[in-house]
Amino acid sequence: MIKMNLGVEEAARLMSTKSKMNPHGKKITPQFVRLGLQQKALPIGSATLNPGGTYTYYISPKLFQEFTGIKLTDDYFEYTEKDIKKENIEATNSEHSL
Image (cartoon, rainbow, N blue to C red; front, side, top):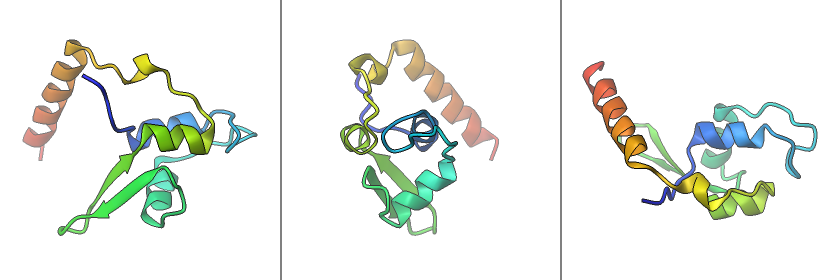
């Protein structure tokens, strides 16, 4: 299975490394990425406002690489069965904790 979306947390972590977008390696926060997507200031994806007032974020790996100059390898996006099971368990646990 191929991962088609880069998460906000992961994008912020990667953007905090030295790159053409961030030559000094300053810390980029997930909130910076969220606001950048909401305000269309970061051309790496989109933010969709849901009826409940929350946002859903999509970060395109292709647009992310083009904008930041940070290359993502193909194996970065490969999920293993173990990863999928772990995500399902974490999603189930977080639903029960609400």
